[in-house]
Image 1 (cartoon, rainbow, N blue to C red):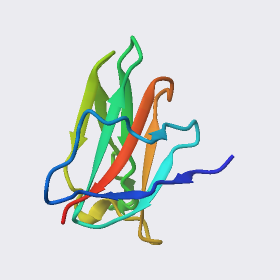
Image 2: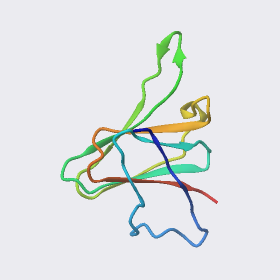
Image 3: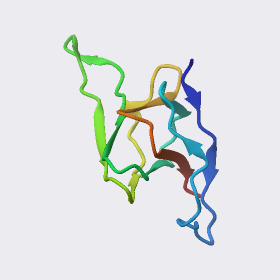
Length: 114
């Protein structure tokens, strides 16, 4: 399987219903989306165990890999908003890669600020 591209959800100026279900279930192979400084990631976990979502940071510093950024999503009702990412997360093709410790019960959306 291959990494799945996420659809970007525009945030309306009237506000966003946070009670609505997220349309994208997490996948074993992870997700990607095109980077923009107006985009943020929302992750929800309905599983009874916490999950870790990792945002890859491509590149190296002095020949050493840069450590990827993990976010722990609490069990059962975890609903985390990851703020817009700086350009360091952008891969050469312009994409940001998201990985999951276990996709069970995890859903994700990429929201774009107006």
